[in-house]
Image (cartoon, rainbow, N blue to C red; front, side, top):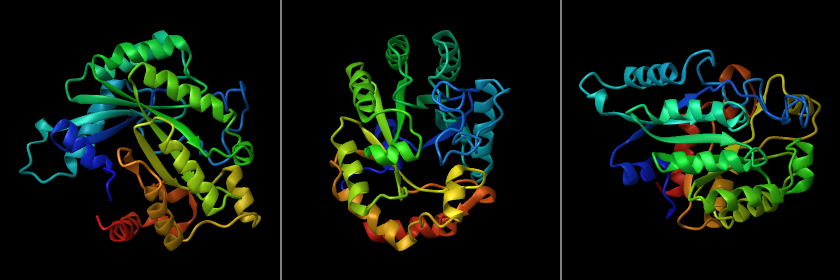
Length: 297
């Protein structure tokens, strides 16, 4: 595999292993606050992809320290954890969906932490007005800023079904504006969305690879308790991919990606207590072993 995995890329860029700390900035989403809708995307849990973040009442600094402690607790006692470095990952909901002054305060608190080497900010392409783009450009000159865009699919029929709430050209423009400011972009794609064939999924991955981004996250569709997607699944409206199908699909996805795209994720691990399907995905070690064998890693 010519593409670098995230771990390989981080070691090459920063000279050591880098750990990611999930940050909850207390954001909401235009798909939940009534601007575009109130139900969120059809697959989205009540945590807005922030199942493993801390409580948003804690300061960013406190969340970073808790994250550091969690990482350190899993390391051998002979390891000097004081040398660890981290990425602050603003993960839950839409992390540019707030007044620019509030964003400046939250991001700056993370950037100023001496053990943080980069910020990764998850957001929607339609939540990047010019004043926020300018803020990101400014902060990117202090420490690396990554913007993670939730695209999921390029196909408008699927986008409508999952209640994404924006057209593909909005994504294209967001990538253009971010790259114009020299900000690196990582795009999220969900594999296994209802109604999408293998060919349609590969079309999305190929499109993302040619859209000017630096990284991609390939995410298996998870059916989570309490979502509208769960209702459709329980009503038999679609089936989830098998593990063999998914492993083969990941292999095919990598074949259509440019060699310089960093693969930030090849699967995903939602909270087991809320996972409805596919249950095989809960055994992350088994899935990763299968992927590594297929990809000869």
